[in-house]
Image (cartoon, rainbow, N blue to C red; front, side):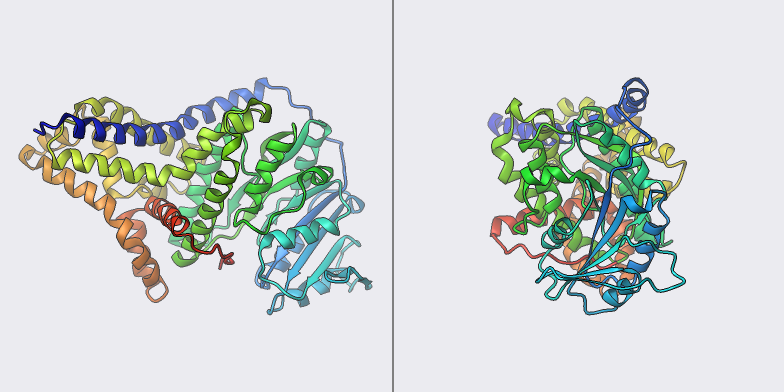
Length: 492
């Protein structure tokens, strides 16, 4: 046993910090279940007949593969033709994006001059005069500038921001508009589903989005906390932009930045409504997913630092004061995971007793399993395989052993009658958790040449969670190095 009392205390503190971060996020499991009751008891101000003018803002940079589908889904939405418009900003595309949009658009605006030209509809396309093409000659400068163009030329009372790959549900506009009967509501968030392409990776992404919205988002909403109004499905009152200003091109997370501005500069409420359903395309390659998640994480870290001074100030409302611990937990969760794993590894290598953490470990493991089980039920059994194996084999074995046996891995090894191998097994599992931190970047590079092999190594052996954890750690690393933040388009 280690005699140095201070080393033990230091490691215990490290583990307590890591466990606190994990536990804070897992409380959302309970809150998400409670939200089902809350929605039945809480009286929202709705008006099913309200029909404000809605401008659907869609940035498009080289989106020829998906933009026509997006246009057709907009056309099919059930909403008065004279109360909706689709504004597609062609961000300097060098594919057929502009050509496709021109088939449908009755109005074409030059972004630099503001001059508009009109054309007759091409028959037999059943389109009313509510599709606008805004052309930017120089593109690829970031989503923020494109959204600002869409906002500038929009006519609507509401701005519904979606991505070019988003498919609106027939009732998305109707379901979103009804919230704005309440003048206190400034923005509304919808539910984003993922196109099921039948491949391994999109199955995991579908699972991630399910648990992120059916547990995290619903849990936040129970507390009245919303710090991200996503650019893929977020509706704003246009009048608020007089206070909020333009989207910032100096951040990789323009939607998060705008969300915090709404929370800190206005007293408006934000609602999450899963009945506002849209469907998105997501990456089918590990490298594209990696680039996307690193960009998201770096943008969120940047916005966190920018808004750190708002923490604890009640004048900004509970969306900031209560939401900040959850926000910080989501930003530093990767570091919390790395810290916890390192702490346990040191305890085993130095023969420090794990007794104080066995009971807490059992509770946290139970909460993880509950989150997975609840999401499987909420998904009606869909993607259950991805849900079970998403943590990766080491985490799965550790969690299950903590639940079944009071002394965790020790109990497992006694059951299989090899208790003398307990320590080597634990160290192997912990090292296995840490290996992805070093190996994942190499696997990502491998995916460009051998996608199936890379998918097997990363998703089956290391687990899908490791991508999210390691990309978050890598984002912190790039921030600490002060590397330039570059907006990289997600390849789908």
